[in-house]
Amino acid sequence: MQHYKNYLPKDITSPTVAVFDKDGTLTPPNEKILPEMAGILASVTQEMPVVILTARSLPVIQEQMLHGLQNTNYKQENLVFGCANGSEIYEYVDGKYVKKSTVP
Image (cartoon, rainbow, N blue to C red; front, side, top):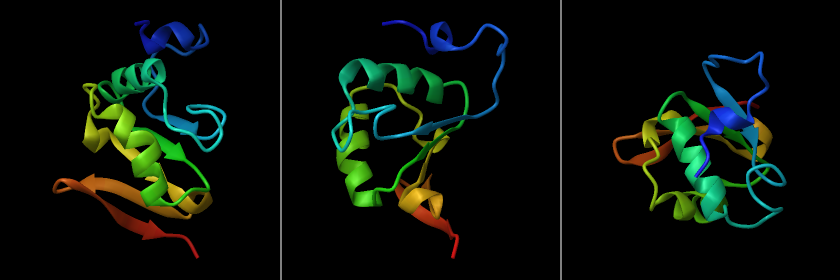
C-alpha cells in the first residue's frame, strides 16, 4: 500500500487537517469505500484529523465508509463527518458518532 503523502502536491509538506468529498473522490458515487482507498484514508487518520463532507446521512456514511474501514488501523477520533452537505457535523465520542453541531 502506498502512503498518502505520495499523493500530495510537492509544496504541501505538513498539512494539519485533510478534508475530502465522499462521492466521486473517496468512493465511487453512492458506493462503499474500496479496500485500497480505505487503507490510504486510515493512514491519514493516524497523522491528522480528517473531515469527510457529503450530502449523505450518517447511516449511509456508516454503511458506505465505516464498514470498509473496520479492518484498517484508522483512528476513529480523527475522523469527522460533515453530512447533509456539511450542515451536520458528527464526531466520534464515547464509542459512537454523535452530532456535535447543526448549521441551519
